Amino acid sequence: MSNQTKIIAEPGKQEFFIEREFDAPRELVFKAFSDPDLLIQWIGPDRLKMEIEKYDNRSGGAYRFVHYDEKGNKYGFNGVMHEVLEPERMIRTFEFEGLPERGHVSLETATFVALPDERTLLKIQSVFKSVADRDGMIGSGMEGGMNEGFVKLEKLLARQLEKIQAHG
Image (cartoon, rainbow, N blue to C red; front, top):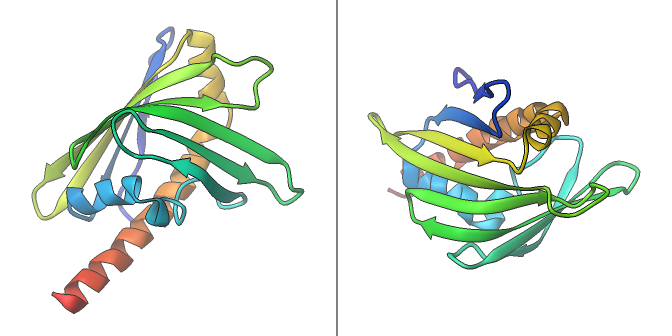
């Protein structure tokens, strides 16, 4: 796959940016982020199983995901949906529940940009409470898990497009 994930994290800043292009129309990419039946098929690292405990994907909704490793250890993530504007944007909070104290919440804005030839540019901005929180997230192995998820997402989008073309 030729699409590469770009992460921009300037030293000393409380935010980072993620950009990646997908070979699918923005409505389909947005649906893969908003439909729990699709989301569970791609989000997260390959080595972890995922369960969606709650996913109320609307403005004012909330979510909670749980990842399980091969030993049965649980890793919870939760947040609140601030805005869901289909198919353009999602704004939500994100919190990893495994830290010694609560409150290390980031604000994520995902923007889905329609490109020529039925392609989509995903742009994510994550703003953290502190530079240390941002650096901790980057140092957590997040990039590897995110890239594994995006590879699965590309395959899922290709399968969805094949279904659409077969029935269209």
